[in-house]
Amino acid sequence: MNKRNFRRGILVGVAGGMATMLAACSPGASDPADLKGQTIKVMVSSGHQQFNPVWETELAKWEAETGINVELDKVDTTDISSKFLRDVTVGGCTVDNVEMLDGGTAAAATHMADLGQFLEADGSSVDELLKDQVPFAQEAYSFDGKLAYYPFYSGAKGVAYRKSWFADPENQTAFASEYGYELPQPPTTPQQVKDVASFFSTDTTKGIVFSGSGDPGETTLSDLIFRNGVDGYQDSQGNALWGPEHKDNQMKVAEAADYLTSFITDGNTPDSIAAMQSADTVSTFLGGNTAMLYDHIYLFWDQMLEAQGDLGDIGSFEFPSFEEGEGGISFYWGRGIPECSKHKEASWEFTKWIMSPEIQKLALSEGSGVYVPTNTELLDWSVEQNLIPQGVADSVKHAKAYKVTALTNQIRQSIDISLVEKLIGGQLSPEEYAEESGKQMQDAAEEAGLVD
Image (tube, rainbow, N blue to C red):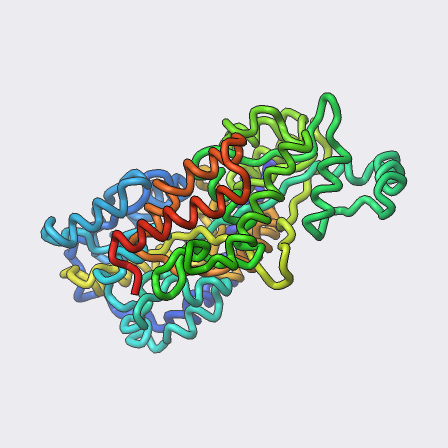
């Protein structure tokens, strides 16, 4: 089935019925008549190609309708935070609207206008907006009592699995004989994931593949650490959550690290796991060489659906948590309006338009790649249209907000990635990883003056 054509038809049919969703969070759009002729500069990630159809076909229509002109500044994801901060501090504040990634939200928050004032002017409120968002959004987009960012774009780790293998009667009989319980479809506990990975590992196939390198490798372990009850990198006073001030958490981190690396030592992963990032893990899975893929599977869901003719049915599930009620790590973007913008009202009109259900659905169904909406109604719609795997939607709904500071990005990129790579490569034991990463994170927090 041609999913893109299918989605296109669905989009037309449901857009009208969903039009009230944005009105619920910002009803009574203000009259933009007095905004005609204003030009706003909108900074977006060049990597968000999902929105290319919006920029190519819909933006000009909105400009003609409102009289507001938009100057798009497409910036590489790794540069957007620093370029924005330069603009609002020493660059004369030329940006009126910006997409900000989670690692940059804290540093940029002090420069953002409180979106609550615009919502209230439209007869709504922050509470009205946030009640329709996934739970982690209740905290992640607010700083010092203000809503600094409009929630819209998320992601999470999930597991894709060879559903046909799990449903095979011979596999079911053999698994029950070896492990004493029915082959889970899908696994619902970490131990079941371990058992299934071991069961499907042979001389020619492996039970599971995950990223062990770079940022995807760091988020693999972080997701498990969160699921083991350590909800972030820093506490409310800025201390490293598994540093010297929180030695009790080091055991939890070591447990998560041991669990992850045991897949390697038990021979249930490909030998090259230490060099793998998401593109590599997906290639391995689509090559028919593994039973399960634990990664950013939503980014490649189209490819997996298209591969079902060769691989058989593919399903998805949220990686089970070690502690009941715990969720994994959240990834997200938000849209903000700089306090120093001279065109805040026009920027707010743009925000409401770009966040409307019609535009979001166009991006989700027609753009290149995909993202995971934070709005629960859009999220459920995306799953219904097979745009997003159910396992990732479940992960996002259960993901945890955590304290983000100006140091968070450095902690993850400059400290944790290299240590996770050493762990996966066998150069650090789980206990050594927990102790060393906690110490380095604490040292960085104290050096940055972020410890109360």
